[in-house]
Amino acid sequence: MSLLIKASPLTPGYTSIAAMKYLTFGRLYLTPAKRSYQAKTDGTEVALDVFSGRCTVKVKDQIFEAGGRSDVFDGPPSVVYVPPGTSYEAEGEALIGVFSAPASEVSQPPVMVPRADVMTKEIGHDNWSRTVFTAIGENIAAAKLLLGETLNPPGNWSSSPPHKHDRYQPPSEVPMEEIYYFQVKPSQGFGFMRVYSDPADETPFDEAYVVEDGDTVVIPRGYHPVVAGPGYQLHYTWALAGEERRYGAWSDDPRHSWIKSAVS
Figure (cartoon, rainbow, N blue to C red):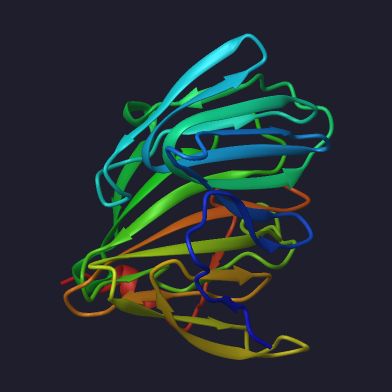
């Protein structure tokens, strides 16, 4: 099996990239020739993560001015959350990640999480340190979606020690699908990602991928560490969704969790 979806050409408008049971991802490219995009969320909740550029997102009687980054390596994102059964319009010149999850009744109204309100944390140590931006977490009363971004310095690892979220063992772990969308600077760079199951899994697997600019990896289950190639910053936008929504409900690979207590 392959969980890797290689980069597709950047074309104006909306491009569908990945679909799982609980989570879908597409890319919206607004250009001078195609500045506007209209959609309705129907039975899903949607998060618009502005990767670069600026746009206006109109939802009902609200207008959100989103964006402001030159690219994803230029600090935290701004993200617009749109609840189910809602029409919206995005207009401007921007590259936007569109993530959605099935949802019915949601108390959270449409809202923008501005760049200044995105939770920013430096996580890990040594060559497994990275910057994590959490845009949609406990701050938003979403039904299923969690969303953020991770930035690996050149040569550094993230999702380290390797963690997973594929078993119902609350409160430490609940099953959630995940999608990673990669961007690399300089763009000719690369990284590596391993997705593998627990040794006791009834259907074990172990996959490794070269990830390049614009690639996507879907993660239905298993541990999933990532490393950036030397000289290249590696960025990935991540989104999670499952039957239960619980930020931080994941388990480290016990064979590698020792690194947390062995900081130099």
